[in-house]
Image: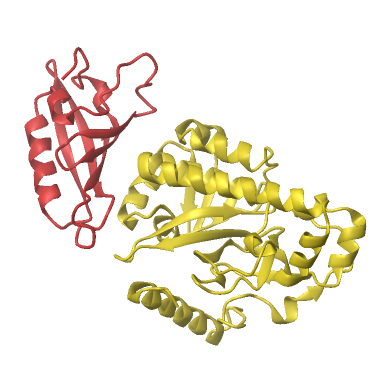
Length: 117
Length: 286
């Protein structure tokens, strides 16, 4: 895995398309907090190897359950701890294909947004 | 007919929907397949004026010969023009309507392979020789189109050297679009394709309010409907679009252009699409 790319900060917030192993197929940081300009891409790399914040295990667990389940969409709240600062996030996971009909294909959309207080 | 069981079931369901629509007075008219909006709306062309870019290239003398064969039809949303393996007996020149061509896979998934508006024509291959449809062809945005019997245009095409390059040029653009879409469907993200498709539709149907359901968009993109909801919510949260009661409103076209894939500019270039002048809707849906 390359580098110094990490989702250990607010770069975490955005829209991702992941395959069932968690490999990033597409990434667009949230327009409110980030821009892609000048940043190395994590496309082709494993999302969870870059999601370096306290709480990412919880996110990985949700992801695995979702991938192996049959639900079309799922949302939950997540507390992300970045260097002693907790940020509340809203996570929405959606399946791009109906895996009952297309079992070989599993693409999950992961939308992580900072909860506005 | 070549269509498999899934295609048949899909078609039957749509036919039933149309029958129901007609029964409840929603105005769908029936023809050969209960699909094309003709009847009272079908009227001979009395003027050479048309907004179809291909027909506008035809010299006036040729147009006058075609005039008696052209009929203006009103196409309602989801009207079918052809289904696979069906003879292409008519060619349609969209004016304000937008036509989509779909493939249906064995597992029932559909995906759009081409979109045609006033820049081109549908069923144009039959200008060369008798041939059959390769895709399901359906109205994606309601409006008018001019239609002509294929053999009438074929006679003109075969005998007129001025018409041949016009037809060939439009067909070439069509093939370019199909090729680009094949690559796009295979390699680009669902979000990028969603944005590209909305822009392509608005280029051909230049209102800020597009009559669309998320179900329809899912079918176009070949994805599960909840994923369209997810993307649409994101675009709405970012102020790019809004949606209500079967409509999508494009609020920020430039923002969508930043989210779409590079294919969009290729589609515009190959189909010679000009920057649309967007008609803003005055009344509010909210």
